[in-house]
Image (cartoon, rainbow, N blue to C red; front, side, top):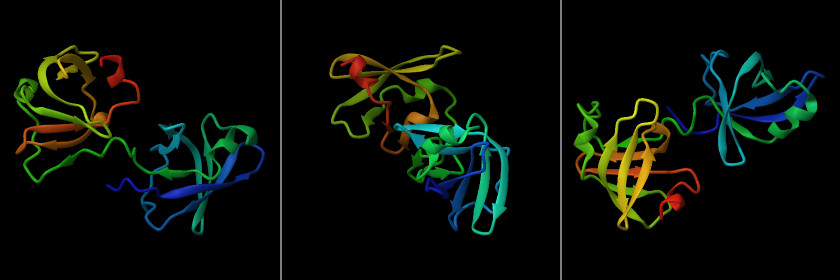
Length: 176
């Protein structure tokens, strides 16, 4: 799946907060409006749940749950959107098999890097909490706890025994 935008909100339509969207050529022909669209607002990826989606040529008129007034929908104007969560499918594998590990303990000793950061670390533990599983990563002699969620993983290399994370702003600073 592509992490490229598939359209852009261009103008308001009607009095109920609907928006007109320009659909790019890569917009999925089989798009199911039961699936959310995603937009970046203040550096956060936000799912937009669709209550109505009507194609009109190379565009569409879209009604979005919780965007039920023109004033509320104005914040979407000019923003590009995605058909799949651009953060969820970014993990890249280096051509090796990507079967699930039999246990997370297999990752102990793996090197850890962080997007946009010089710090590096090593996975030294795994907290198997059902609600919030965490990697324990030693960085500069300090323990850093990284939630085990796909959205934070940017690259996995079994061959190099390395994981690259992109963490939310401020998470690493909590520990260092």
